[in-house]
Image 1 (cartoon, rainbow, N blue to C red):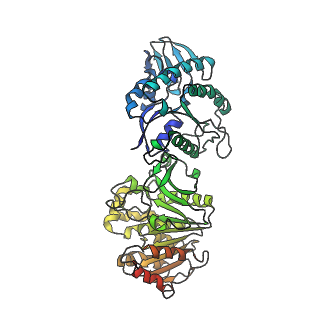
Image 2 (image 1 turned 30 degrees about the horizontal axis):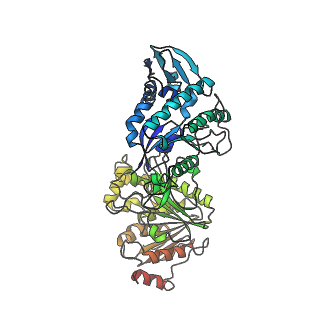
Image 3 (image 1 turned 60 degrees about the vertical axis):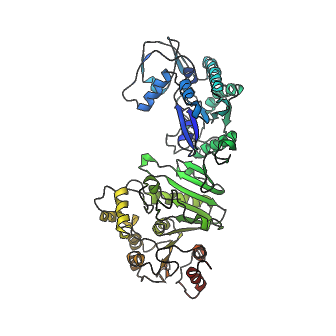
Amino acid sequence: MPRQVFVYGSNAASALVSTYTSDVRRSGFVARQSLISAMNKPSAATLGLPAGLTVSAAGHVEADAASSLPGALSQNAGAVDLVLWDLADERFGICELSDGSFLTSSPQLARTTIAGADVLRRLVFGSQDHLELWREAADRFARLLADLKLTSRTYVLDLPWASTDESGASVELGYGPDSEEMNALLQPYYRHLRSLGISVVSVPGTTAAAGHASGRAPFNLLDSCYHEVSARLAAACGANHHPSGNAGHWNWDERHGAPVFHWTDPSQIHPAPGRTAHVVLPRTKAGERFKARFLLQNTGSDTLLVISHGALPRGKYQVPRFEWLATLEERPENLLFLADGALEAHPDLDLAWFTGDAGDDITRRFSGIVRAIADQLGVRRVLFMGGSGGGFASLAFAASLPESRALVFNPQTAIRKYWNRAVTKYQQTLFPGFDSVSALDTLGSRVSAVTRARADKAADYQVIYVQNDDDAFHLDKHLAPFAAVLGMKARSGVSANGNVQLVVDRFAEGHNMPYRLVLNRFIDLALDGWGSPLQSWDRDRYADLLAASANPTA
């Protein structure tokens, strides 16, 4: 069962649950509401909300006037596993009204007219008057938590404001206190909460994110900062709070045995040792729509194998599919398994070739992710692997990374030449603006390795193209056109420049992929002689491999 979290706050607490966690569900949400406003009487004033205020922002202002926190928490207490609270909204201060109520001096309230009550005074966050009123409110809130049996399940986030981003550039605001002053002002508030028996989770040494989705600010932090919070919360809660018994991470991928890290900025991805699962969220402002999921096994090797999956029959597989994981997981190389986000977004789609749609080029995005991971791992060899539709994707990825190699099995080389039903579904789902599948040709090399090979005669990557000799459809429709633009025949051979090796033989029946032993042997062959021209396939030399293909159970 997912963990149910009641969120009180609008920065770290809200982001942590909505962005960085997958095993967590929000069971309640109160934002833009100071504890002073929340734990005092509701206001009887009439609020005139501006026309330009969003529905969400207007709701926060109205809920603040109604002092909604106690009621919302009481209503949801039975379904709350955790109360996650940050003090971000306290920075706005409060205003005291003549009816004895308080309102949070948020930017939204500043645009709102107040009738039926006068503003007696405004209290700045950190002032002695504000702190005294806040302590009184905190005492009442602590009693409410105790009555609801939520004290031991309440955690306050202490994430200091950062003064610089990851490049060292200042992120200080042009108004109000700077980060050092704000962090000092917050300490008495945290101390009082601790004195009430409420847990405060502190993560020092924060850094702001230059590319944060909400903009550069002292409180918009690196993804890794939120991952650290998640790990500390998991440790604080204990393994008994997690259905898997794993105390190290809020997010745990049971199926693949790995913690899940969510990222909003691909440049922040960090390849931790061991096996980790990752999700790069789409940047909607840039037209991205699909999540980029991958599983990384960091062994410390100087080689990275990048594996792309093929078709995903929904009755047999579930997303994300990390193809060949069981076959390859014991290998010494670093392993990077990619999952096509278009299949996650469209459950009726079995195959999308890692292209994305008209606005979101998944090939380009994953190419950037692979380059970043390869750089951080410090590898010298990157081998892209895949069969069928995954082979098509691997050809495209290799073309984006100089000096890489692609090892592909029975790949498609032109999407439009695949089976009509699958191509039509692909076009109608991902490119509905096209009036027919023939319009896919306008996408050029994005949907055709043949087009790419024709245009890029001086390619600086290498391809080992393995094709079963009894897969007639792929021989005729995909290998033959690809070979032709290279001046080759659809049979075993090597291109004139030594960058493409064709291997046509019987490694499995029809369109099936090679078995475990054969696949691993091909990887060894593909890694051999790195940087040198590829050689023609020597059938006699690899007779044992062919024998293993013919008798996989031996």
